Length: 74
Image (tube, rainbow, N blue to C red; front, side):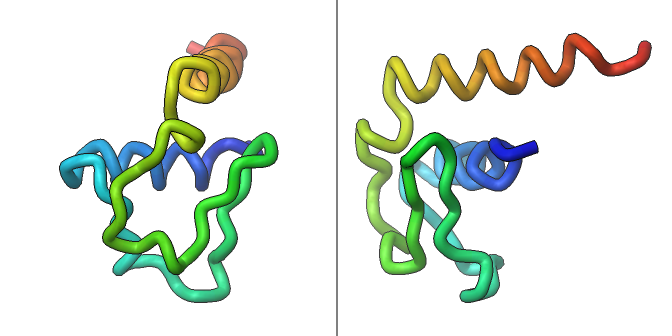
């Protein structure tokens, strides 16, 4: 899914005190982009910004993930 790598990076960020941690990502993995929001390697160690994960973008990510989950077989 187009949101998977982005969601993985956001989940990792929330788990690391809201700081972007890209130590396990290979340089060719960047940028990680979803709906016009890009996470680049130079953000490693920096705090997440409201542009990356806030009310609108966070909710839209949740909705995309939920829509994916709703069509999975039981």
